[in-house]
Amino acid sequence: MKRVFLPALLVVSLLLIGVGVFQLCQGSRPAGRVEAVTAAPVTDAPRITVEDLSAALNGAHPPLVWEFRTAESYEQGHIPGSWLVLFDEIEVMARDLDRNRPIVTLCA
Image 1 (cartoon, rainbow, N blue to C red):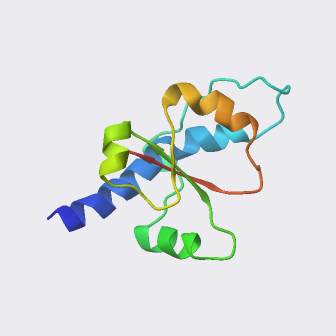
Image 2: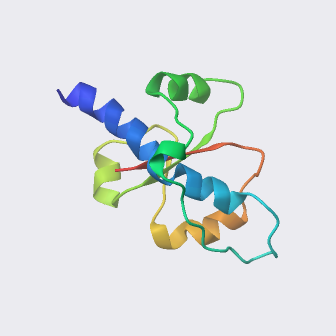
């Protein structure tokens, strides 16, 4: 059951904050200033399957993967190469993003 639950949780979690981070990284804003955004309902969020994410991560231009969870949860298991992101770090991390690189988010 855990093997089925984890991929499903991954897909749903990716969607929960993906739109918010995507909107955060879009548009022109004054340097050093990040505005708050309201995420679209989950039904409007772009979706990615576990299989598509795996293929993208093994591709020529892999996406950046941000995992929003506790450090303890991240240590128990995470996507190889992903970054652990705490909510209070988003603004600082978003400043230096490569805006041409896709970001996949996971919230668990």
